[in-house]
Image 1 (cartoon, rainbow, N blue to C red):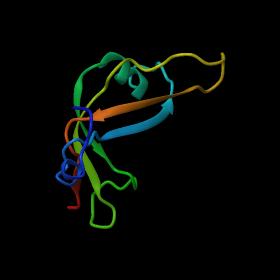
Image 2 (image 1 turned 90 degrees about the vertical axis):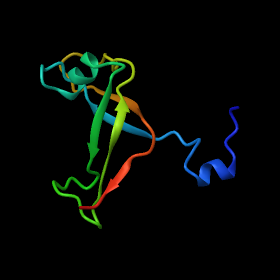
Image 3 (image 1 turned 180 degrees about the vertical axis):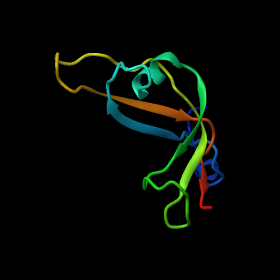
Length: 100
């Protein structure tokens, strides 16, 4: 059934969480793009710190969980210019809000 009811949403079921990113395409060995390329379709643990803080707090929480890398990232762009790629990662279940 592809219909999500109000009750299912209120209980947290039927919701698909995802993380959307836009990043620089870099083929350097240690780049994020290379990590996504080499780990396509793999489940990995993540920590998302939307405020850029190293330690989570009540006012600046982190979010953790597991996500799937999905398909390899796109390639392309003009020579000698910075090119970016966009990617949506599907979160397994619901992310955990970490405040301490």
